[in-house]
Image 1 (cartoon, rainbow, N blue to C red):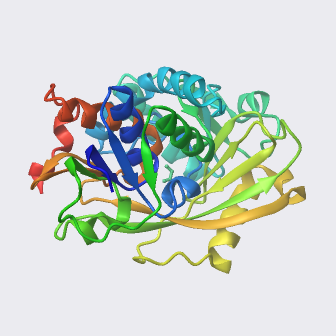
Image 2 (cartoon, rainbow, N blue to C red; image 1 turned 45 degrees about the vertical axis):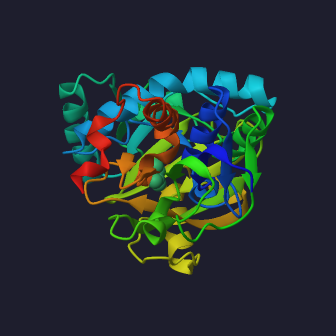
Length: 348
Ligand code: GLY
């Protein structure tokens, strides 16, 4: 291997984004991954949804999500121009819907919380939900519209990042790195998602399994991104420009288990059908399970750790946080101001 300025371990959306951004700033960059874009990024639905994914007690994550969301249109535009690959960034907002009275009460509480945080959400009656998205079931009780949320196709983003990175002079090595010793670079970045602790023992990242489905329908079957709470359990449906609908996702603490189970598929289809009954007519095109890298406080680790850089632990927000993470790591490499101080690994 030739010597590089930077050696990135991990070709998920975080590692690829860091590698591309570093290469565009003139650094010599090598990225190693046996299957770039093939793990959590391949599973992901690509919701860029800091508003509709906001969770009580996670305001620092919300602020990071909003900061990264602002970067997404510029990031996607530059990526498409550099790679020639469209990434299907869409901005029609997310509708969050409630199935029964308890789900509606929960959604009302969430709306109050979102309003208190100054987020732009509109409360919708059941009828208004169906006006905004005609495929929604007549049983939907009410909802919220988070207009500022976006979504993107992460598989296309991963392909575009590889192309743009290589166009910028970057090198991809399709190998698994098993140790940090003697890597031929001035800086090493560990961006290996749930696998990062195998390189950095003691890093408190765990695998959180997410089963996810892909349905194939006619183009425009669903016009907007829908999140539903159905008898207390959460489901989302994310439409692609080619008619694909991504239905996700389970949250399972099972370690490195990527089996797709009958129960996982059943629960996703059961809940998705309650809010969009028409999906039963669509082809079940794919089932997949990915591993989110979870951390104890649900914030990623981005920054200097021992004698390497780390960018891992993005849990449910890897796609959303990719532009900010890349800019933060590259700023660190150049000795510039820390863009994600709350994510410092010093808190471990
Ligand atoms: N951000 C969606 C998920 O992790 O399922």
